[in-house]
Every structure is written in C-alpha cells, then in structure tokens.
Image (tube, rainbow, N blue to C red):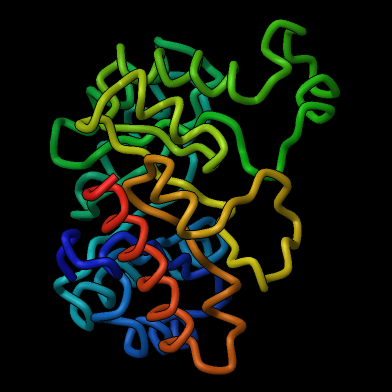
Length: 245
C-alpha cells in the first residue's frame, strides 16, 4: 500500500507467537495497512521465515523489523548488516547508548534500510525515567526525546520512534524529511493497556507523525479490517486538516 493512502501510514505489529497466526493477519490486513512490524516475540520464534512469507503474501507492504538493537557498537553493526540482508524497510536501535552505537548501526545498514532510533518507550513516564537514573534535567520525556533525536539525526538515522506527545516537537525541529514513527496509539474508545504516553490516531498524525503503530485496537477488534479502516479515516481527516489549516 502506498504511503500516500491513509492506511499506508498504519504500522500493524505482528505481536503473535506463531507464524501461522501472524500470516493470518497479514492476509486479512494487506491493502488496509501499509507496514507490518515484526518484533522480538515473533522473530525469536520464527526467524527470517516470517519476513519471507510476508513478502510473498503482501509484496506491496513495507516490513519493519523492530528488534531495538542494544549492545556494543561492533556487535550491533554486525547485527544490522544481517538485518539489512533480509530486505526489510525499517530497523530499530535504542538511542541511549549514544552516538558511537548509532553511527555504527547506520554504517552497518549501508543505506539499504532505514534506521530508526528509539528515543523513550511509550510505556515510560517521568517517574520511570527518574527510577532508572536519568539525569534530572532530562526527566521530562519531551526533553529527553529531543536530545536523543538530535543524536540520531547527527548519526545519520532516517528518523526516530517517539510518542505522539513529542512528535510535534521533533517535526518542528527536524523538518519533514526526518521520519517520525509513533507507537502507543489508541482511539478514544480503546483501553490504554500498558502504555502511558498515548494519543489518538488523529492527534498523532496532526501532530507530525509519519507512521503510527496500532496493535491491540486492530488485533483485538471484532472486525480487524473495519478497525483498520476506521483508523485510516482518522488519518485521512488529520491529513486533510493539515493541508487546509
């Protein structure tokens, strides 16, 4: 699905334990979402086979390998080379190891895959940042997100992953060519779950996100396709208002 279509901005996470169940959702949602995200649970269980099968079933969809690499630079650089060889479109790396790691990852990607820096997980709030020892001056998630986004940009990352609460600030500072991917997205009628910094699909896109990650509101819906199309409608409304605003 083309990014220019509203559903093309939806990233659907295949957070499922088996290849069979994951591919059921790929078949169901192809043409309704633009990106399928493969995370730790599924990749550890099934390996590169899941990437190959998604390509067969939904060749028009982008693939987001969300492993959030986090290790010493040499190790992650090698892992990124292997990830790039799979032919995926996006790969994530944590920003909190600093510039050396980010630069190594970008070098390992070799320009064939877009590297996204994970700034601050949407499951973390200010009290959590203090609990894990983040400096007081960065206790406000937005301040920390912007700091880490600067590191990612300077290292050559294609963009960052941040909550919708910070998407606007990232967009304002870095412009339209720096990708902003926003997880923790819930419609007003959806349960928040384990997320803490959440926004609606409309607010995320209106605020500056290029892509929004929407899992449980689609996966747990009685009709996942209908839920995806409803979210695409919110995206379309936000894009339309941005053009005319």
